[in-house]
Length: 134
Image (tube, rainbow, N blue to C red; front, top):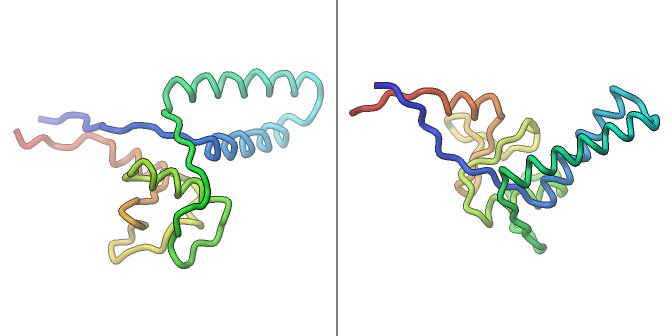
């Protein structure tokens, strides 16, 4: 028998939400330019995003000092994301930013301190149907 095996929770932090907003705002401006109409649309879209995020995400707000990350950790701005993952005991950090993942292990997985860093496409593939042994 096949079943959908999904057991996830979505966690955000002010740092993660601010980074998401920053990236999406830059993309919006590059696509649509800066004018009064675009600014109004961007404001509405940002508020819609926040309504959605606060409905589906639990918010965690870790404070410095941040935990130590892997030795080759290169982006200090990502420390709050790692701190959030550590604080909640996350199994995964899902991100397209693969260049800042921990080094791969022997199986090619990017795991540090029990937290696997994974690209969204691979994460979604793992949520696919799995065969039930019953």
